Length: 390
Ligand SMILES: *Cc1c(COP(=O)(O)O)cnc(C)c1O
Image (cartoon, rainbow, N blue to C red):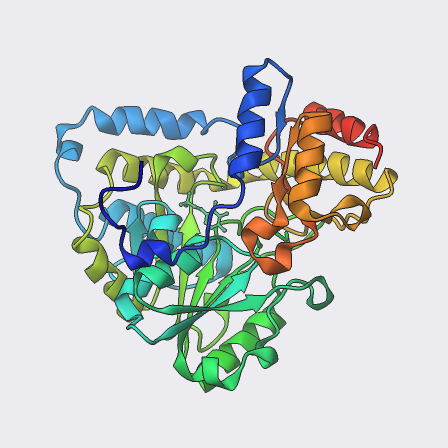
């Protein structure tokens, strides 16, 4: 049946969903009882730590948490986030204005352009990349201008390649390190260059730091806010989802100047009414126990990364180990198109991978594997891929 109502142009402008066919095959394989290894979604398989669940339980008993939360977040969470930013990155922020709790970082990232983008403005967006940068820009009436992330540039955007005409219209630039999907990590030199570029062209920098706590082989993700001069034009989006296995809880925080956080807040007070206070207080507990929790988590992903990458390398695939996040981004066997390679691996090995093209045109020729299943399953996946006759 044709739709009764025509959907708004902003929805029509979103890129089409490419993987309906692969999704159907995946569902059919699972329904047929096949032993499918799902490396398709970036959702941690480990549970939320017990101390966070206990804190939620405790605070949910208190009726004071049952009413509308304060729009700008609970003072406890703002305080804990400010202390964590200081301890973790050496960044000094005021809990009153320079930290703004959000309903998961996706929410903040997608709503932020509503605060600054007018129709006709552009946002510079990395591709391959996380889809909300683009959809948030489109919903605000802006034009996404894509910046390819290429292996030859270490998956950093080539700022010098952005067309002057696009730059003139650009109001903001998105970056995401450690990067989904490429696993690249940015260093101080890159952030310094980015800041100088943003100053020259008067851009706001939106830095998605959802994976700041997951890095491999000694890589050390940093906060761009720690670069002198960054405070006035950088807003960072931090998330509890990947750091504390809390994807379903929907909590994160924005960090940056009171001006940028305040503008985000102005949008948010008009579309939501805060985060369940007991969840915010449980998030405080997560930040306070960060030091004990994070090392074993990193060690777990490091081992998974080694098993999977070393295994694929032995099969002769040109795999570069990620430096951060929890994805392996690798070229398709025999230079196949990414959707074709993913379809064959699903059909012949019962393994779900994400075709790189789904993250943007520069993702063509790549596959993304999420390291969100146990080591043994990753070893099994490598064995199965090794048996495919390309
Ligand atoms: C998972 C992820 C997030 C985090 O999203 P939440 O909304 O906090 O769960 C943000 N950015 C990227 C690139 C991600 O992959």
